[in-house]
Structures are given as C-alpha cells and as structure tokens.
Length: 482
Image (cartoon, rainbow, N blue to C red; front, side, top):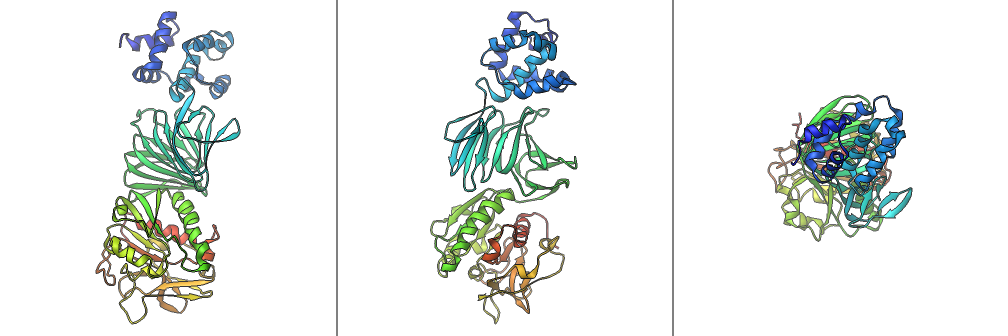
C-alpha cells in the first residue's frame, strides 16, 4: 500500500481529507479489497444512521455509483450533507458498492435448468447463463427447476425447486422466501459474515458448505463443512451448527440441533409404471417426494432410473431411497449395486425389494405381498424416535392398496402393521447391527421399509407425509435408537 490507509481513513471520516486524498481513497476502495475491508472496519453504519430516518430511506434507495465523480456529486449536495453528513453519505455509497460491485450487480447466473426467472421491475424474465443480476433483481425457480449463482463476496449458491431469493435491504444479507439453496461460501470476516434470512430464522455464514430450506412455516439447516450460526427470529435463541449437524426451526420455536449424516439423497426410480393404475404414483414420487418433501427437509436430491444407475452413484450419499418398480425390473439392479450390504441408510418404498435387500423373508409366510381395498393401520406405541410426536388417523393411511412385508422375528422394529395381522408390517426399521434376513446377516446401516398408498400420497397435507419425514430424519440421524 502506498498510503497509511488507517490514518487516511480516519482523517476522511473526520472530514479533513483533501480532494486529491479523497479521490485516491475512492480508487483504492474500488480496486483493493484490503482497503475496502479496512474502511468498513472503521465504520459502524448503525452509529452513522442512528436516529436518522432520512438516512435509512437513503440506504434503501441507494444505487452503486458508476464512477468516483458520481460519489463526489452526491456528497457535495447540501441536502445530503444536512441529512447524514459527508462521511455517512460516502459510507452508504461505499457499502453498497462493496456489496453489489461498480456495475450494480450482486450475482451472476452460472447455470439454469427448468423454469428459472428473474423478476426485474416487477416483470418476469427468463434467466440465462452468464446473465448479471442487478440491484433489485429477484430470482424465482419453478417446481421442477434449478440453477446455480455466483453471489458477489459470498460464493456459489445452488438453487432448488420453488426457490424465491433476493438481496435484503441490509448489507451482506439474502432473503430466502421459500425453497432450497446450497451454499459453498468463501471465508467470511468474523465481524461481518453474510446472513441468510427466512421467515423463521437467520443463518450467519462463516466460510462453509451447507443447505438451507424454507417451507411450511419451517426452516431446515444442514451443515456439511464449517459452522453456521442459526438464530430463531421469534425465540431470539441462537445455536452454532457445525459440520455433520442439522437444525430445525418450526414456527416460533428455538433451533433444535442434532447430528446428521452429510451428503445428498439418491432416489432410484423406474421409467415404467408397474400397473396402469400406478402411473400417477410414479409421478408423485418425482414431484412430491423428491421435488417437495426431500428439498423441504434441506436435502439436495439426485434421481437415477433403474436402467441407468451405476455403483459409483452410491458414493457420498446421506441416504438412498428405492421407489416402486415392476417385478423383475428393480431386483437385478439392487443386486448389481450390492445395495443390501451398502454402508449408508436406505428407505425402501417398494415391498417387492424387501427380500432382495434382506429386509423381509426367512419365515413360513411370504416375504411380501399386496392387497386391494382399504385397511386400517395399527401404529404401535413405544420409545422409537420415529414414533415421537406422531398423530396418524388409521383410516387415512391405506385407502385403496395395501403393501406389506414380513420381517424375520427378533430383528426389525415393527412400527405399524395391518389391523389384525401383526406379521404384515407396513412400516418397520432396522438399526445398524440388527439381525436381518438372507442375504444379509446384520444391518450395515439403518434400513426402513415403508409403504405409502398412492391415493394418500396425492394429498400434500396427508398425515402419512409425517411418517415419511420421520423416516428420513431418523435414517440420517447420528443419534442411537433406544
């Protein structure tokens, strides 16, 4: 550095810099991040604007200047001098400049997939690769869309379905109105980290990798690396969430933190419906289970069809979910992947896969089966974590179709079964190390068998989704079951 920037910044804030010194400082602030960080460390914006309503309005409407001369014209205006003074006005401009860049940008679109729009001046425009997001722009993602942004001085932000994201009026803050984001953040200044705000919580980013989801009056945070400070807006309680942990903020509740596996979720699906009546079920798996439920739980989801999945696709997964498939389609693939002995949690939604995965069989009864018609489901009482807080009306679960499995005695924890048939489980689980059926002796990781009636799944507010979400959260939890 050619100048004693500490001295020059202090003299500028006192209003005793010469015009030449001011122009030199402006040029350094534009070209040298070290000077900009040093300047901001000397300035407390709250003090500069304390009690000045006009100054707050100025901050909301301020746009980044295109040149140092623009700043000079601004702070020479008598009205602005009377409002906040020359130093405060320049502080506002420089903070805006540091956040959004000399051209008024705050992010660049790197990738888009499906429906992604930019809301500019209230008008929707298609987002295209390489486009610059200007101050005031909002990003909106459709139900089946996704994208990737490079956010200035924050890092890369992956956008999931149903995402609504835009800069807040406060410095170094984004607002996530709804949807899912995954952030790979640059290292942040300890005293000025970027923050992401939802309706329920605020996450302070400290150079890390994490996901954040906002939907249904709930915020979900999952941290893969580093640390995020999560504060419940209603409770005011803050928790430091480190890598390998997750936190929920439900409504007005404080953050609830627990250990959680890191990584994405792999969903295995079939391209063809096992039966004509099940075509709708296939679509619901993609649209509801993946596009909505897993994203809302803060997971990045990748879908692979049975005819294309490879063993390498299992790497780095927090969870694998096996969807429905026709007889003879999925079983060979499960064997080829050696999924029965894979060391990550698994949820199987297809009873025809239970025997191949060692989750059912070994007794005198058939390993699995299906029946048509409504059936009452008996949910057992007990201390299993998945049963905590559940309130499921029995008649709302299996209305048109029953799919069940018969786990071997003494191994699985049966959580729900058909009324009058305790041997026919519609929801059961294995803890790591539990006895399973052939070809698996002991569960290599948590295993859950769950059948969801397609008609029940078609209702997004159906209580059976509580069962699914409880299964997902338990599967990736690092806590030991009782």
